[in-house]
Amino acid sequence: MEETKRKSIFKNKKIMIPIVSIISIVLVISIILSVLYIPRKLTTYIHCKSADVQEMYITIREKDKFIIEEKDYDNVLEELKKIRVRPMYFDAYKGRTTYKLHIETKQDQYEIDGFYIKVNQTFHDYDMLNMDLLDDLVNKYITL
Image 1 (cartoon, rainbow, N blue to C red):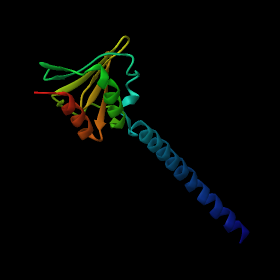
Image 2: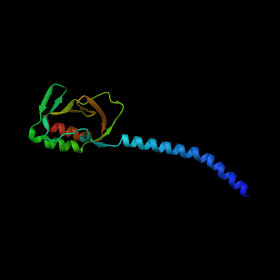
Image 3: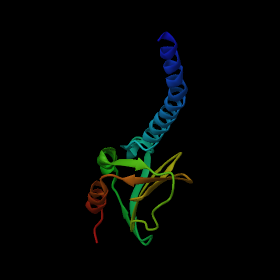
Image 4: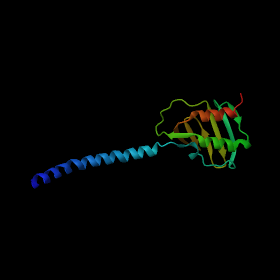
């Protein structure tokens, strides 16, 4: 009877090792993917304070330019903190929004679209979780 118990334990170990290793690999991959795609604030890409901003403006279709006054820089940056985005590592969108928010400092230039943020010459694509907040922000400062 003791012989059969030993055989069954060894039999289970032969099955358990591959199952545990597969489960651990799946777990590690899912943790990595969840960390990569975790939603974050849009301002994680923007490293400036309102005092550092030299110019802030909105362009529509690369033609019309609406300058945001210096007194509103704090408000714009505060509203950008409310916007949450999920990073995208593959460019899945073919279109872009008609407007872009530009923030220029001494060191950096930021171009914020509904689908990406361009920091100097580097593009960061994202999926905006609350697009209405950016639309409202832009609509506040444009006068047609």
